[in-house]
Length: 125
Image (cartoon, rainbow, N blue to C red; front, side, top):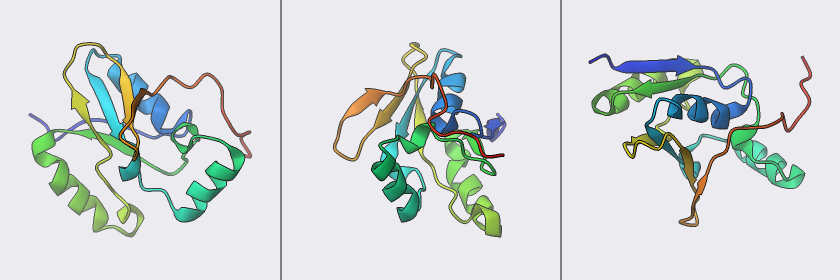
């Protein structure tokens, strides 16, 4: 099988929109919130504004769905480029046939990662 199954940018709706789109195929996806590479400044701003960074537009970013046996190698290859230094494995496919998106928090709670219904911040560009 191919190493990369899907590729998308999280510009509209952020990580949550991409994960929900991919989950529509019948496989659920679980995101590890702590594994999402966010700078301390972004985490602080999101907390201050009361928004979930998983729903914020991420222009200039890329998300890949990669076969598990290739994930580490793909991340290492991405990290070789200056723009890929923060590449990380942020989740996995859960073969439950439900087609849902989940997020696991650092506190051990798993919740549904709903499809975004509106942008949390106005677009500047």
